Length: 491
Length: 95
Image (cartoon, rainbow over all chains, first blue to last red; front, side):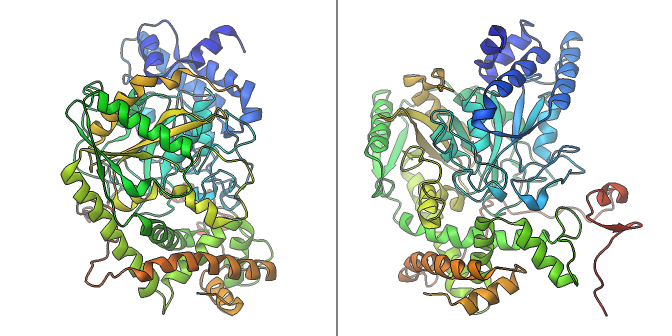
């Protein structure tokens, strides 16, 4: 790749936006730099399922035309972005990482995709993920696993592993992912990127392929906290197409970003320093807390007593909702249809047998069981009651503190293949992130160091509902002390 | 709580999933292990606790019951595995 393109791919979203604004660089040059970088490294990283070179360049040309006329569409006009393959993109194949949707070309854009286009951002392509977002390693993709740019023998995390890997490898300055139990934050932690899961309802889910509707939320993966704030500003728009979209208007996420943590109360939940946690991760999180204390924050130990029940509640609620959401993949209106099926019932079951992978089937089975006659009260209803207790824990904690600090994942990235045959071990990866989804809260992962083996680790900040501004401010106060985003992976 | 192969078959039928005999065996073992781990919940007293069914912090609202343009049939049928005129074609439902 050319030196100029390599230089461009090192820029963050806001750095690139500034260069576009000063006309030092054109949107076409920026987009071509991304395409060159993808061509140079994606054979190794395997973040992209498909690259839309033509569509991205056409959008970039239109952006340059607007600049020339002095009428940019937004502050991010011309900054390329890529999307997890869970977002419906009109005219561009969308598979959600599944064989059952292979060849599916959506007839419409998801609301967030429309918002990105309206802001003038060229869409570079679609990124790999665990099938239907079910997984924590991107190994459940029906197509191929994605690799961690910091160590190609390891997972980038999941389910938004393609999004995190592409941003970490400098293939694109930003990507969108979704987070149902940690699927933005855990891959961000594993790849040394910033991953933001907004409050449930902050970002529209319309046109986003559903996994567990009461938990799913859309958010950005970027290299810096400021970039995450800038992206959230674009996508946090109330949407009448989504009944759960919050009417509350978005805050100004960038203006108070540098405000610091002086006088803030930050809580360290003792239940989040779990058994089996990597000691390097624990010490990195404690060091980050100590650093924030030096900046004037008050660090308090807090308790979230029902934390140990969250994993079980989550792995009943999410599969139950998934089993219902995935009933639509029946071979009738779109996607795969089993050939030579006799009769309708056989058509359904054969299509689903051929189209779904192991983890998806496992969760459909688990969810169907939890909802079935005789077990509903013992499993599904019980899990929903526990969900109430977990929410209450956070509500009580936020009486005392402004935000909560903890690790994003209990360990750094694990080797590919290490947990594929042990679903429970894989589920344990999400133990620190999924309570946030159960409670509907915003959470962010920001890099907080590297392990002795050179793998990134993530600090998680959890905030009050719709208080993304405080969350981002705390994450930024931490980021400032290390500036880890300046380190590039060896790939 | 252990799941039998018969139970696995029953749940698979409810979910319209055809499983191979190997999958039936594997899911019986794996789902039993997962449900065993979930038994943790049963030890928690939740009597009198209201269930939470969603995380929305605002009351979900209903849209106005008004007619507006919907997806054009041609575009809606574009992804159909099989079509017949302006309809999705399916195997015979009634003999």
